[in-house]
Length: 122
Image (cartoon, rainbow, N blue to C red; front, side, top):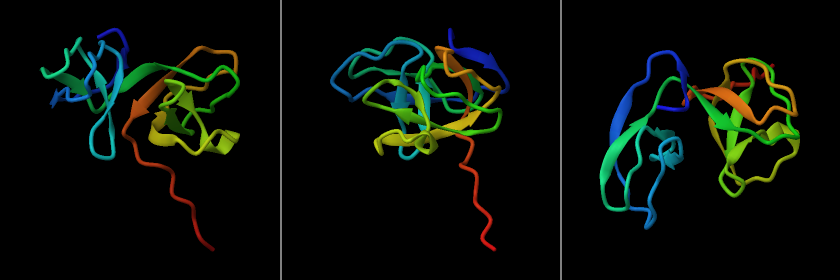
């Protein structure tokens, strides 16, 4: 898989009912979590999608990330963003930044499906 970077990559079988073909490396939504297609999956077919592991994904080139920062997916832009960076509210949490990335970087290594950071209430 072209996006795989490291870690244990668990996969599940997903049935593509989107009405469009999905390419390897594309994100798909699985009831509240993200999956990354491991192979090309034609509409109506089944295919493997990664649900854990560190995967390289396209990133908003105006947003920097620190290691461990929450990462959101902007479905309308097909890239990683951050609600904390003033992005639109169409972002969905997908994991944590595995390493820091400069704003100008085009890609971000994301540990997918790691829960959001809980905020401590005093």
